[in-house]
Image (tube, rainbow, N blue to C red; front, side, top):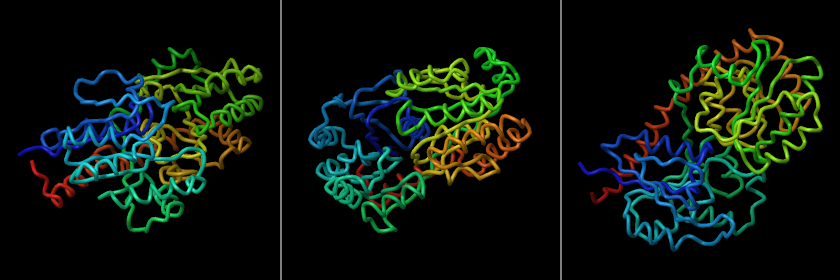
Length: 377
């Protein structure tokens, strides 16, 4: 039987949750049934070469935005995929290009947004979103909250969008005392020090400054904390500069930089913190929970759908430094509380967000479209 040809269209490939999610799909779907290609709008960023994934970069410059419909139309006409799957605003023009190229099936999904709410977008942009959503055969979001925001801001009917949650590999991301000891030894932290870690791009939307200020308060109040920020981005220099004015914390902070082994870093943490201004369904939050870590996250986006309040973690309001400091102090003071939260987090992910379930949801969607459209293969 000929395989279903899928082309994923995305901004770039790197360390971000969206990008890693696409890679999970590309490597997780049955290769006997699906032939997959990834098209990136910009360069490949810093993703290492993958021999098992075919990638076509358009190499557009992010500093010189412009319409890409023509380039995508030419690509689709040449490659003739059965399904084009675009993600987020960055690649939404792929929907229009697919229709012009007469691609049999089109999928578009939304995985999050920037700092500003969708209602702040110009009307012409929201109207173009509405057009592309209606031109798609399937549209979905990665959380109920994001689905509802899109429906309200763009004016789409409630039955148009579906929800497909992200999933995590619970074998790769699992507690390991041996790995934990080795990673903490590399970090040079004592057994008594509580490591509060965060993984993600150092960007304004992630609001790492709130975490640093809260940790400073907790340390000043007597908590033995170390903050580890894994990732890189435009806010790194600013964060490092501001940290110099925080004497009680500046020697208790580690900027780990970019990494291709998030699982290794998570092993060293005692608490995972996610102070973001907005999230879709955070892959790193799921990975931390799967590793058996208690989590402290803002009450935004998909976080409220992942974290069981005061069972697997704690939710707090955006920018509430004092509350976050109190939560960090509370967790730092009780290893039993950390263990109980972490065990509940691990169990919750195993039951509701395993990678296999996400892969099956995508596989079922693509297969359903194949059956309905009767692709010429």
